[in-house]
Image 1 (cartoon, rainbow, N blue to C red):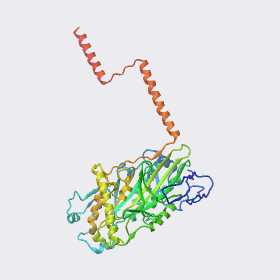
Image 2: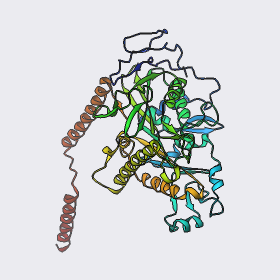
Image 3: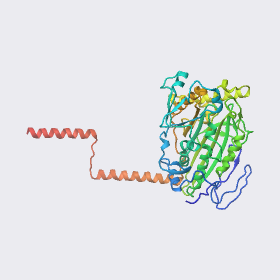
Image 4: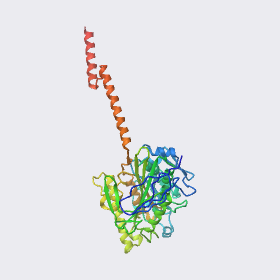
Length: 493
């Protein structure tokens, strides 16, 4: 298919008020306006870097994805991405999809030795179930029933970054184009591979879920119907000690969360940037990543001291029909849960650890309320849970990556993480297509409804004219009784 050139230009905004999105033109132009800068519009769509690692998305298949219905599936074959109409990873459509990833023991864990010979986790061949070893059960004093867990997928320690993307992000690409909000969260003990799974090493075979899903989105735009205009807008924040900091404009370090019927949950005053290529997105993430709060602890040489939240908004508008869809992708790298006694935290790092554990505790309370039938869900107990209120129990398709280690030294933390994942798997979300139909489409629907009414009226009139009588269930029974009585009378006569 013809490459899509329907991208609105780039704007850089440092307030919650966004500029109007101009329509794309056939000529390459650079526009300037007070308050933002813009980049040159591409003439022939988005130029991706050479050697596409994930292949392309066929226009016909993407067209199916843009219609409301069963989401197409992006399947991974020989490191390529293609689209098909099924979705094997979406068996838990209304619920939170939970996958578990365990890393092998690192050098520090090996040095500490173990009272247990071998790994504490046993993975079953179906890649869906796991259990703590008999030795680990004895050490933690738990029964075999409580030591078993089942998730939507469990990765072996040999799993590649591509394997992780295949089970988490790839199915969300067509869902975004359908108009669904999507969220991917990484949760686990500090140092167990959350940031590795989400980011990895960009530009290599070890890049994580985020760069892979971003590139797949822009491939989808490039191969979409030329009659559809797209706008991609990104923002990047961290939640540090219960304050929201703009990672693209660090001076904005105490942003407020707002909520409205029209916009849902949003961050007031955050920098929002329109982008036209996956490379621009990765550059922005690199800039923001340098502004994240990190520190060295006994558990992790580069421990994230904050929760990072990257938000990508995808807007589509059909040039002919005038209808539009808007969807949001939220990518969350949670700070690791910590035991202060193990991390050696003191001073500022101790304060950070307490803040991290407090917000993660609030997250656990929200999940408990959602899965226990509680009438009150305490979203407002922390900035993190309020920002994720759509992702957990609301209008979103959500995938949770839980990470752990095979090491005996951390088995209690790993058990806690597995229990967290088990509870999260019970959450029922209410995802919906975020679509606005044009006036013409509403008129067409109205005309269709009126035509159906006319057909029904004609049928009623025809029945009345033919004096047709359709007895209801009760009348039919009485009629049968009368007929039987008449038959008896005839027999007596």
